Length: 177
Image 1: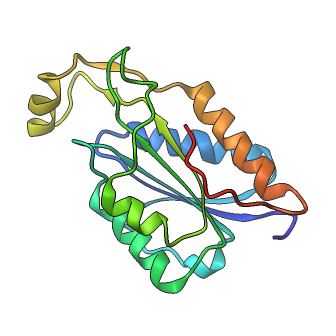
Image 2: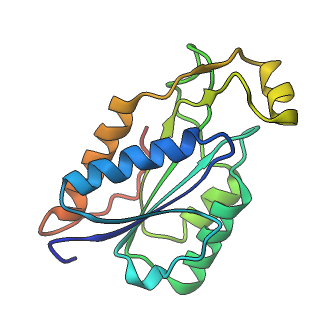
């Protein structure tokens, strides 16, 4: 990879909590001299132009949203980019927010076909005014609140920057927090 890796950060977010996490990651990587494109997963990126992809989705009932899954399918088809990190956000409540969540089966199948570096789970956010059905379903399980941890997110982004800016990037293919 060049001195300034080209990184795509693509995300899907219904209530903008995951979008903010993606922005924290982008800001951290930019502070480490990485070239970052930040965009919603529903937009079609030029994947071969990127060295690294960081794909994230909000988790709803243990599932990723459709746009990031479609993007992963596209990445499998074209065998790009060189390295992939995945994250999801969604666990709510003090007892759940910091518990790693497994990738949904359909996402795990795709991830196993990519140069997966790491997977991170970040706490979710439930705004007071979540939209319609989402509000009704989630509110039964949790009260409104924000369980995202910006320090956890930026530490993970620094770990990515350490890997992609090192002279000899390494892959581990392991799932971590």
